[in-house]
Image (cartoon, rainbow, N blue to C red):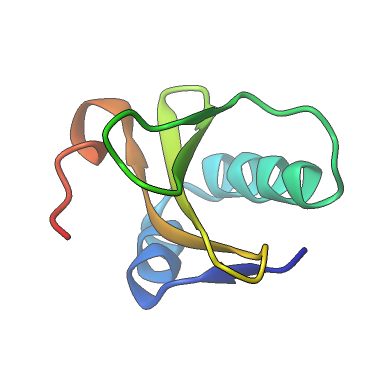
Length: 84
């Protein structure tokens, strides 16, 4: 499984505190390697999931080929209001 970062997610990750960014990258790698992470499907959204990393959320979209695209990364209180 491949994980592809959108330009927006890449920019958001680069703006985070390096300690938090490292924790997020480690969680994404765990998910990629099949290890257990706190992931849930988002209600009302087709093929979209979130990974919880402390107060931060990583929004993922499952692609038709089985890979995942990271759409957005941000704090819990702000992340669920992104536009399509």
